[in-house]
Length: 149
Image (cartoon, rainbow, N blue to C red; front, side, top):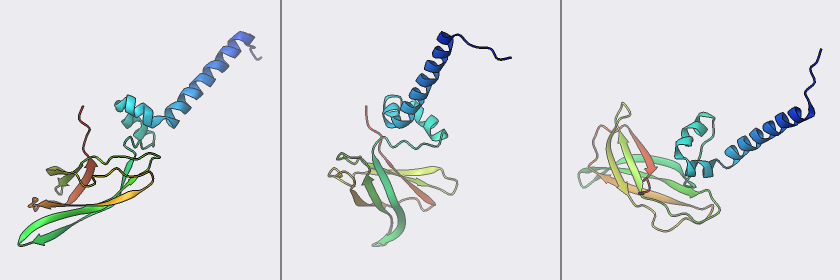
């Protein structure tokens, strides 16, 4: 035997489902705006499989190699930064985190590598030389410097 809900109750449940769907759709489609307003939500989006690029800039083809400069060992890090938005973007200073074999950051270097804003959809190559880095370096992480508030 089926129980019939009164029309107002059924309409209320339908409205609730529609509101939850709209909220979920908005939270996914506007995730950059949500993370800008509530930075603590970024790990939640990552857990759901959504990367959120708040800056609108992307690293590509980052690599490093050791160079001998007049008997001094230097680390050269190079790659591309691409503006993935529809507006020009200023590139913040880059932070180069040098990590040992355990993945622990043992040295950090920050440098401004691109001075002009990147046009929409365009990229630029960067290269930085880090003088006298620790010899125990096994990997390099490149990231944007955090904005100062």
